[in-house]
Image 1 (spheres, helix red, strand yellow):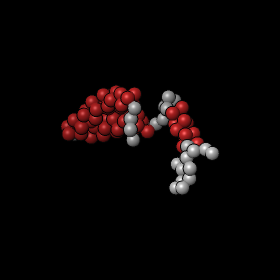
Image 2: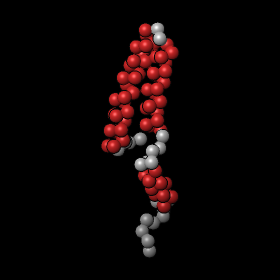
Image 3: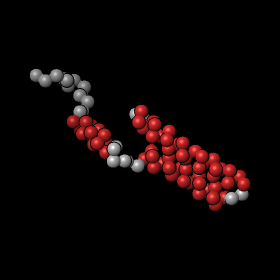
Image 4: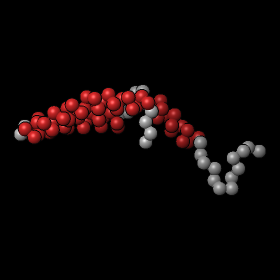
Length: 85
């Protein structure tokens, strides 16, 4: 799926916070503190998942417009004219 410029910037901002948490989680896991390491890795993954899959209020108009366009615009079938007579 293609990303817009603002979507890419939003993902970069999320990664800027999630990656240090993930790295610290890996460090804790390697150091023997498995509970804290696993918790930090879970939080980092959750941050990225929320940014990727949860619809924000600013995404609602675009999603609604996309559904309307899908219903209105249909591909012409083979042999069907695309111009009005």
